[in-house]
Image (cartoon, rainbow over all chains, first blue to last red; front, side, top):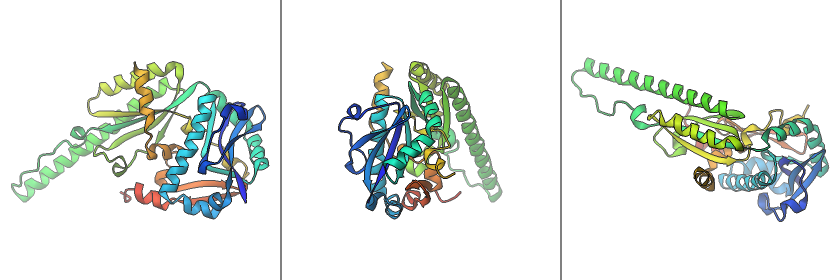
Length: 257
Length: 59
């Protein structure tokens, strides 16, 4: 049994535009035609992408990583050609007919999203509170007496708390300033320190939809904003396909109602 | 030129940054992903392996 795996909705494309593009599990990517838009799809086997198989496979990090990267490759290939609305990982329909039907149901929202995304890239901006600022009292308190020790501990705790709060406010201000220069902005949840492998706490994990014509302005704003506060450092990633800016009544939820 | 630097950033994409986007905002850390199947079913999946890797014990 096979099914149709959907990667992204794009402005109209033809099979010759995408050439020999490969998707998840090395499957050949095809163009499915909708009303004034296209969808990049491939045929997948339900032994790997069926309900039960997916349930297991999604919990296998090696499979998840491989599939996520293969999915991303197809979306990037689309985005390199034309405006592209990425679909969520593992958006799967019974067959091409079912995929086409959902494409049509999503039609108006998709065309709106394509118009918004056209000429834009997504940029990731992560801010880290530098260690010196987030951990203001590295010196071990000198134990004088029980009470003095507790007082010292309390003082250093308060200082740390205040500093963490300040960091979040700085991050929020930087987010607001950058959002003004972007067409759209979203916050992702900051990553756990164990994930980043970095001692410094992440205080902002944001995505911005930036008009390519305004990219230079956006980038220099990042430098200026971060440069004026020596307590935070920045990690900029991109350009990304507009993953974080897919309209919410998403294709995969739409067909349920 | 800044443009050159920007493209260099894109070469190595971290899996976490990618999953932030592919699974939707916050989904990675909350451990649920909603998957559509066969055009009818919505399946809620617990990403146990990922959560075990990703998630700090609830603070």
